Amino acid sequence: MFKSKEIKEENDPLMPPLCIVRFSNGNVKRKEKSLRYQSFRSLELNSQARPKRIIVASNQVLEYAGSNYESEMSTITSSVLKVGIYNKLTHNIKLYDADFHQLKPVLKFHSVDTKAGIIEKSWKEKTEDLALAFGSKNLKKMVSSRLKFEATENTQTTISSEFVEAEKIRAGNEVVDLSQESEVIPPQNKFAKRADEVYNISDIISEEEFNALDANVGIFVDISREDLETWKKEKKYCAFITHFLDINFHNLSLQKAKTICYLHYMMCFINKNYRDFKRKDPAPEVPEPFKKKLIEKFTINRSMPSRMKDKILAYATVLALIVNNYLIDGGIWSLSTQIPFKRLILIAYTLGCHVSERKSQDTKLIELKIPLYKYEPMKRFKK
Image 1 (spheres, rainbow, N blue to C red):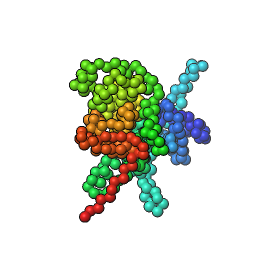
Image 2: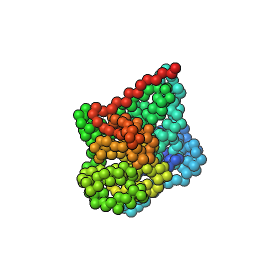
Image 3: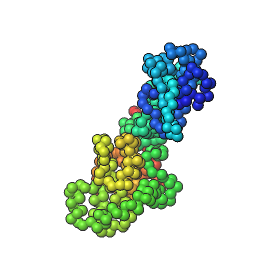
Image 4: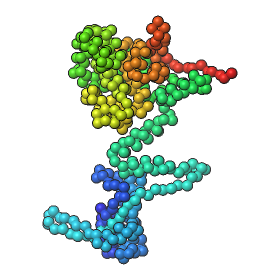
């Protein structure tokens, strides 16, 4: 509701001083400050012998418009509708005549002009515009997140696409370069002279989280052999963590204990499925504030799409390399993450790791060392 004089409309005894608007698809939030109203008046009269008027609401993204003469509701209510204004000082109520306007979205259809480079918006794009302008908070967040990742899809290389292309290489079709940067890996120092300078653990675990881990690492530092064997049988922790604790039994520094603890929280999210993320609490075994941080960093609208799955895998792989002196067993790591070994190898290549075979144990080692590995597959030609 707003006064006509606020939009610099000339005073007219035939025009009600107030307008009441209603949006066809919902209510406007009070925090919406960017919404701007305009009034357009005609010399013609409507059925109530009042000048025809159109109200336009705009937020620079989408426009809504409604008149006081087109809809039947406007015709009925405009003849009887009044608004009472209560004065707190005098305790009097003053009545004003009011016009009713039902506002509907104005969808502008542009003709396709290939010479000028103008392309008509699709139905999906128009729906997204509506959601961003007048949708709920969750809907706006979902659309914004999707648009954000679609915008970088053409310029950033993802592990998912690399996996598909790598499969084509095996068939002898195309060659793909995995050395290109991808937004799924942590910030990488390409000019590092040592392995411990390539990735910074603070880019994976914030200082606030690292300090908060003090209260959660006691179970790893003071573990007994009986508890460790029980964990292995019950599979309470992944194979990588139990194997690491077995090798470093009672020889675990506080810093490595914290790293292992945070890695466990990441593994909990890696092993979750679609249904788990739809629950009220997707990871009850992960305490706060770590759960909230991981959800914000690696999920989108209570789901973990392929891009986010690749991202958390890359971050967890770097964390495993750091805690294990930049060398991990690929077989144990694949068993822990429940991810196909080929996909883990592609992630390792993207991180700059070297992959070597250990024939004696029928497995492969993933090692981060200088110089960083650059994946350059050989071209294959069809006969």
